Length: 369
Image (cartoon, rainbow, N blue to C red):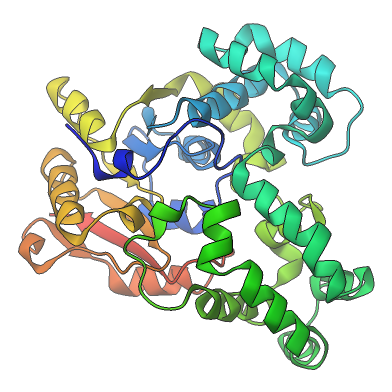
């Protein structure tokens, strides 16, 4: 089955070397139960792996990009091979002088020969930066931190923004020192649709965007810096500091490492459209109970969104859940699917208020009827 997303852009290099969606609210929203079958958009693999912490029987990760699946393959090989500290080094979450050595240990455990070829070609960059830094989106943030941020804020300002404070202290600092006219000007230019389309995401991914991107993002940054605690925000740490500084996402936390490692053989991945993966599972008699859909509907028309949601509901387990994000394109269950999907509106809104990956305008959780 053809998918609209496949026609949007070429899926050759690594677009996302990390998952930029908050796995904490994802897991809370999906409420994965032991023994569940889960279907997940792969992206870089972090959130599909995070689902293993809830003891599902199977996690099926799909992506149109072989490069994104190579990211997941290397993560799985690293879980099998390395201890937690070494894993963080190879990821790029910690400084390291031995990433080449760590990669050589992991390489025999790559499942796909093409993944080995893919990473061998990028061995120099992997050794220098870690695999979590090698995506187009991560390079985009690195450009911002290196070439834009220093013209607005000092390192002392950044450190103060990220220091643990009370809500009133965060608000005072943001309003009095951070949110200057120069900050608003340069932020608006760098995070415009034009610049983000050129350096961060593919321009075709904005086909259905409604509203002004930079205004939306500026408001969400304020939410992350004032309403939430920046000191505990792994996404904000990486953007501003180039590392997590101890505020790790779910799949990288020490307390989750052994659980993921012991269940690593329960995850599989396929280069396929989501629609085709659903058909394959249905033919095998498998009904997913939990769907992690990332922000896939951001790139689809309303009509195609309804078609995919209907397929997910028909082939999913009754009482199961699906979760996805909206950034600039409002997508949710249409009225025509009221019999098949029930929006969990209060849960969605409550979780969205806690969303540390602050780019999005909505988090949607729906239940299969």
